[in-house]
Length: 455
Image 1 (cartoon, rainbow, N blue to C red):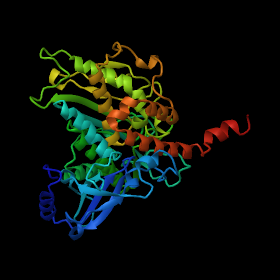
Image 2 (cartoon, rainbow, N blue to C red):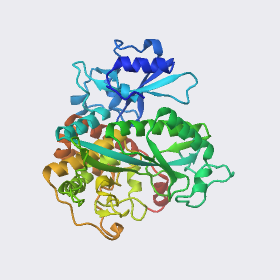
Image 3 (cartoon, one colour):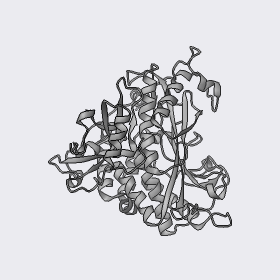
Image 4 (cartoon, rainbow, N blue to C red):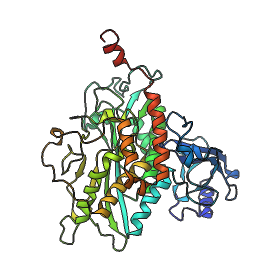
């Protein structure tokens, strides 16, 4: 990986030569976090090539559909204009599972005038980080990403099942934090860690989570854009490794009925560029007013941002009482029943954990949205509610219960439009409406079971 000027093509060329790369995957994360792009022979990857993609490529949903009309086309031209792609040299990594020496490089999207495409997820996160930089601040984040290993499933009508481990048996009970349960999949995780090391991904610890076959990987604290890149690449990596061991890895928020959902908890803090000090702590070690305002911003804006944190109809199945997922926006210290948690930490490491975000969220969008909520809280000096010191599950639901409700809240919250960009919100909500409409065409087994002969 090249840790230099993202637009320094000569450094990128040197890296490719040193690694004897013969093929390059040119990647662009779309609205869902799917890798779009092109694969080029090494000799075709040149600074003056001018690689392009239609701009709608980053503005489509998980079904691959586009709106037929409406505000979407006020942002994305109906003439199918090109985006101009520029590689970010700091993202270049080897593709460890490729047969021939292959590199992968994440690209940024620009228009013909050289401006970042406003609705591209990476552009949105860059924009939020720029707001912090203008204040002399640097946001620092650390995602904790949960996922399930499941047996191969080629028929979407059949429920998912835990995979067979080394013992020849599948998990039938919950094995939270079990070392032996992780060891059941040692060959897979040896490949995952080997791939991550070759890609220089910033991964820390691996644990077995509560659900059968549910795992969690933690990332070290770092700059949001770099960590969003790493989560994006890690998802590709673990899916590829799982396939090579005859199983699937899924980041669905609620893949298996009766099992806990999968989250992407994000720890976040803000440091001063001038001296590296944590603005969440006063000189005497006590929590600062910015700490409380940041929490206030999360409380104020998380409900409106839920379509960004919980982007699919399935996402809302995870957010249920007593299922290790929050139902409200209460906050507390060392309290895992709340949506906003402050872990016990030294003043220098004081941070806030957003526990609402699902593992299915686009990492660029989710990080941009949670940082936007905190930024607005500090800018508007929003005071939080009283700290929750008991069981937050005994409180009321404070989050939207469906994607349709969440989309309307997002459309109505103009403060988030100002920070994340009105064009992005328009494209995102229009695409999500298409997905929601597609889902509503599906008749579920529950409806056939309980309604067919009884209503």
